[in-house]
Image 1: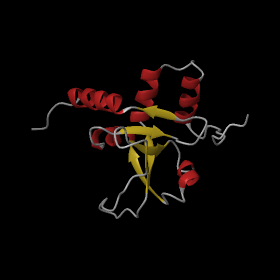
Image 2 (image 1 turned 90 degrees about the vertical axis):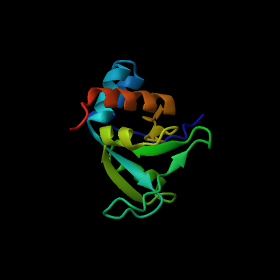
Image 3 (image 1 turned 135 degrees about the horizontal axis):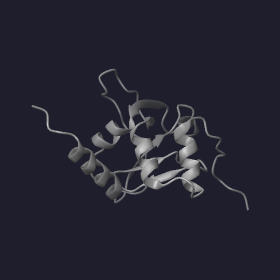
Image 4 (image 1 turned 90 degrees about the horizontal axis):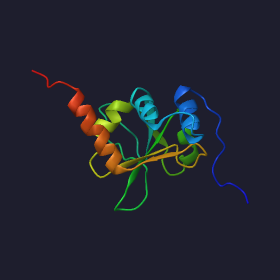
Length: 137
């Protein structure tokens, strides 16, 4: 039986952490912290202008549980370039904070080292981030 997922060799510390989490040697809370502290590469179906307009993320899942496709290295979105040929680089923390309620994250979809972060977990992380940041004056 062949594996339909693309092979994966870690290109950075986040990818090493993802693989270690899959192997059970790196705790999930530390992986989530690493995701928040790292830049992610989010696929877009349309060109993204300098002001951020035009961004149309590549989604997987269904209407009840849509997931935005994001990647842990700039080389990874190429796997889906036929469907989404543009990429937005965004800090993980900012990505979680800006993601609308009801959306999950598919990190590295199509690769052996993929991770699904369901919408309820994204919402929880967003609440924790908001609680940790003091309000601005």
